[in-house]
Length: 577
Image (tube, rainbow, N blue to C red; front, side):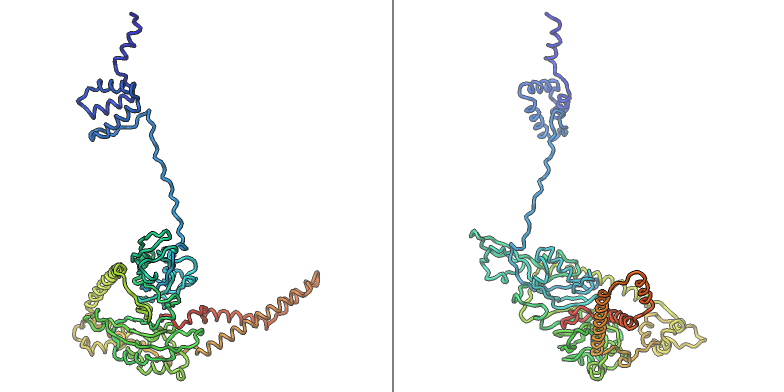
């Protein structure tokens, strides 16, 4: 027998160890430690030769997956690792507004005006309430294109810093009703409430249940937290105007009582009720044709839900009803009432300012602050606002959170004031250090029993809280009576000056145009003649033309400073701010 065949025979009886078999051996040994490893490997190799390596490998992998104690097996060298397929990019279906019907809506909402530059959008102002509102309608695919093409109108126009609780707009927006579907259970789309389900019949004849857009929730998601929609209803007619169909507007102005005489203030406020010329209670706008307005009522009431232990800290509010107001009218009226309530003016001042024959020019005085003013409500005869519980829940939670934050901040400030109020100060230090601001403070403190000790006695002390209420009474400053203050031009004088400026500007422009056309027709001198003519021009000054140019520059500066170029400022529906 040939010895060369012996090794070959021996190799067939023993298992062959390679990388794959070693991994299989390790895995199966861990999975079945009671089985002889050499025997298992021999069986696996025999199966690979007879059944195929792929089938055996899959079987081993299946066994390994079923055994919870088996370690994770690494991919075999001879196996190809499959790469995960990249997810196909889904092409979203383009949203087409033309596929849906539209409906005219009336939207009621609130905003805190603290950080806004007024309600109405303006080219030079970014942070306006109206801009955020229109952007929200666009982002939610409720409108597209120019807002004016969507039947848009606003009820009030508040200025910088002024808030609103019952502001109203009208706008035509998208519905969820397809243009090719018909309503089954409703006569018209106006009968479908926002967020409600409704059935439609498709062109195929099938019935389908849809949900109308929940407009308050939909819009609020795209708005900043200090603007909130809380009621959306169908407009009574497609031609409905939030501006011209409004029957009354109600403003609230909040203030602390302090030392104001509320009864005196109420008596003066009643003189403002009725139809009057309020040109002395507004910011003059020469684009307004008439300054007559009708104030339906003017009440001053205590905020009963904010009863203060100290009467000076009691919160009050003015409530003013009227159909339309002039520019800054409410703030001007409130400021004059403050002068009367503080004793600086008599209640008869109101009648004098309303008499245009006696007072044709408005005296100079500051307006009341903008922050306490709120456009509280707008009233319509043919609109019945209803309120979604979901929308009210969302708005109420946000308002309650904001109120809680302000209450905590107010409590901190109140605690600080109370602590400072308890600090002891001496009568001598108070009168000496504050004499420049309040020369009669010592007399007032003595009248209240806080001073007047003899020089031999030790200095008397008092709590600081007794001093601040007396400072306004002891102040060196004295208010100048309103009717003796400087005045601006009357309305007629302002209009005459504007017309004169326009006329001067037009004359100068005509002369400049004529001079330009005459110069273009002259023959251009050449050579020495050009030098001579240039010298003559430099030595000759057209003084009348210079004067007119100066007048033109002055008139342009005056127009920019005095005249409001936006004619909408003269709207009788302007918010008083």
